[in-house]
Length: 272
Image (tube, rainbow, N blue to C red; front, side):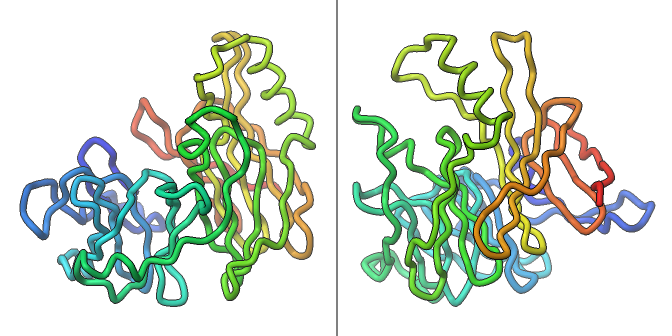
């Protein structure tokens, strides 16, 4: 679990009753420390923490610092590692939405080796279109799924070719369209962004999208929309949560939801 306040990753075995855990990463000015940590991913038991302050990904194995990988962009959205690359959202150009960063990068002079892929959605006509194209990225099998936080389009890319294979409009799901309608009815200024797609997770051919929105502080919607990705992306099931969360994780039997206020992880049974 990434602790945004402390800036480190806590690790413990959820299957045991003990609550003893270790932490990975330390905030500080040193080359092995983190300046402005924003998120993390795990690859082959190595924890990679995205450091916005140092524009780098810092790798830790067994709790010890291993190496630093330079980047040209860091966000707090989900990213992952596959096929020798870090896949991370990137809006440094108007023509791409994610970057493939070689794991063997060591110096900032190597930044030209970063590949920029994907395309930007036409979300808005003003100057904020690039920033609104930031994506949450997850790996599912041989594919990558990319989701904006304020636009209901899910894109599926082939990891081998970086080709866009499919787009799915999440507003076809009635509960998501209800969120969009509520946002429109508030008549917000055009430069205001409403982040209602809060997190994504992939597990065993199912993509889970956590949607969260409060309409004028009165009506609260907290749902996880799951899509079957076996062939085309098709709605599979909706799970309603009783309160607001920041992020989710899924296994065969449970939904794990992290709360923003109580600093707890609530566990729910996953209906079969």
